[in-house]
Image (cartoon, rainbow, N blue to C red; front, top):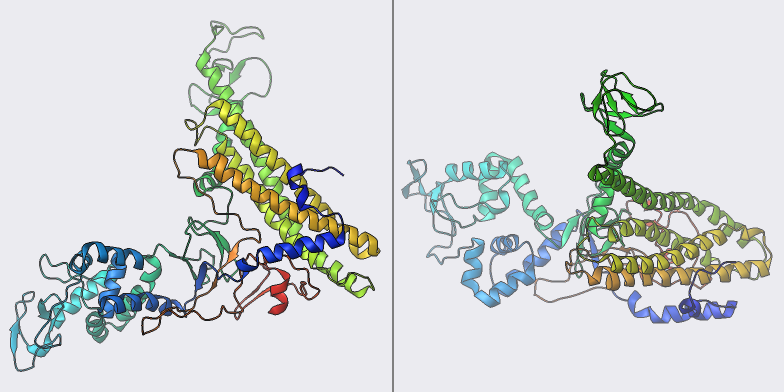
Length: 584
């Protein structure tokens, strides 16, 4: 059996069953503090969206002693970044904070927005005298009739400006009270009032850098809030795994820019154009690409034009196999030949990386079918009278295979741009690029070899073997799982420190490596009560942390296909550890 791991990984391998169990126990103790840590991402459902928004509103209302609509205006202006809002308050003061966001607070003798019915006032917009009870005054002090206010609000809501509706007085930038807007609009246009409330509610997601909609299609209705790190990969409760930064599918170790370029390159016809450049010549008359299928160097286009295949120049029809009458192109043109060679080289390089990227992607799809086969093998093994009763190592190995196969597939897209000249032409010298390329490819090759070996052992019919053979396969799968995890971690460290970390322009960052796969966002729960105190209840059993350790207990094994269950959907979660499944 070929060994792909280096001497540095020898410590990750175990020679006996007891050693493997001890290794897993040590790993559990090392990661015990991680599993108790709450998730850094949270799922905000349609039901919890109001509570999530209310949490930030209460913090601002309590600490600044202001009304709810003023707090909402401040938060929308600062993109719902509470810490940034408080920083502006500390640095520039309350007056500067309010004026910058369009919040105006005056103390009036009468604490209301309307006047008495007996009084008559003139509206400066419609120039009509109206009773006082049909006049409304905003916080900024400007008064207009209710009809003019309603028309103004209706136009603003229809045009999508309902989150920050300004006073209609000339050169007044104050934001109108949302309660007044809602009250006046609902009398004539209840549908617009509902739209106004929906815009205010969804502004928590639309204008918030820390909260983004789940990009699932069809949309699940959930949003994800990342509290600590915006550069992360997350799994929504609907089962979709995506990059929080660019909202594309999870693509580490590629940066967001690399993945976008790779998707475009694989999707469009850029490589078809390269093939046409290499294998065809343009007709000098109609400029359509012509492919030579044999014969001499005189080529005839479908438009009737004859031209020389060597130089592309227009010629007559008279020719022999050795020459074309009245035409000579024996002079060497350096630029054209170099352009063709360059196009051919780029095409070959892209084909090399894309072929391996596609091969691992296809292997991942085929290995996904192993799930049913492995469940059947585990079921058959449990029915047999074997010494070994715990088969969680099989599902853990399968999960490790899926995660490492995905990383390995995307590593080829990363290598295509990292060691090419499209993004980092001026960042590295040719010698430095070659050294880093060899370093990365060595680690990539080690990971690839161990992943293939892990796939091979998982396909073994262990349900037909005797006890000793099953124990031998068990040790091999556990060893390979640990080794693959270590190699994936080292590849990420190499990318972050030796490759991307050494670049001058820090625009390429990748999501950190997680040993137990992409983190599933926990359900949202409020942490700020009406008294301004923080309270954090115990984490719900329906949420999990992806850093859970490999299971070694007989109670920790996969018993059914639907391994992620909530009140709405039942999905298979490839990252779900077996111990969580039995608990739920």
